[in-house]
Image (cartoon, rainbow, N blue to C red; front, side, top):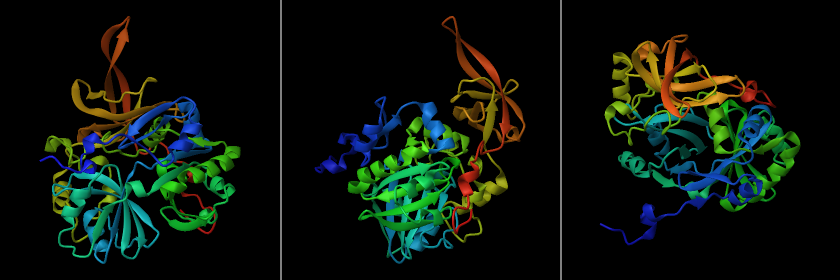
Length: 401
């Protein structure tokens, strides 16, 4: 049945500009934009190499507004959130956050969430994709809980890099130096209310600024102006993705297919198969997929996501992985790492070929005098993450990692 309400016809919705778009467009030198969910964001502002260098050696400003955000409130909010996620959230204090997968009844990962505890009975969940109907279906039995999609109500900008704290202080934003990793504070800055959360994004010392959309541009501009003397610059999605792979961060839609989108059950992945064992608390009495994950632990892995150090200089995303003549997996993400000076990759391989230092090969398509041919490169299984900044857990003032 066709809906009479235009806002219920997503196929007719146009791509939207984020609240930071005006400020981001002023910083764009190459007019390179890409789609992230319902929004358009900068893919590259100037040069990928310069933006990567900013994150790894100075600081980078990023627009994260397209991230999907939910507000969960009510007396049953704590119980519902703990039931939803695979990690134990009962010890999460107000103004703290944590990362967790959430699964279907078969124990396969639907998506990841960063959960922020805003108050005793209020949480914010940030996810990759939209899940409102599924969340509401799973809230049956929790009489006093409301779940709302507030993506358009919150603008998020992030700063990554060793000077990110200094950049915020130079802009006049106080008290950020007291934050520990995964902790947040509410501040008032130039008559603007914002929430600042410290995290470990891209393997760096990182902060997120949560703002009302109308406040987004002036805050971006002030932080950008103040941070220029520290060589902080806006960073697009391409440079961020290189840093993301270096940090070993797994991304739905790239490194695995979320359970809700998988065409066949064998395409879905459990947290164990993604190397996220530390994000599953089987000691919890109950959460979505717990019984299946207990059985999975006993049964063993179907596949395993590993890190690869690959020969050559060209990324190998999508390449097939071989052990001798045996096809054992495929590369899900890959990049040339300027810091490590070699190609790195995340790959899904058969568990008996995922041991550290295992020597494999990746098969790629190359062209010789315009003629296609298959060739192979050596690939060693290495530990993840490939790189973590020493500043990620740095003691700044009154806190610790």
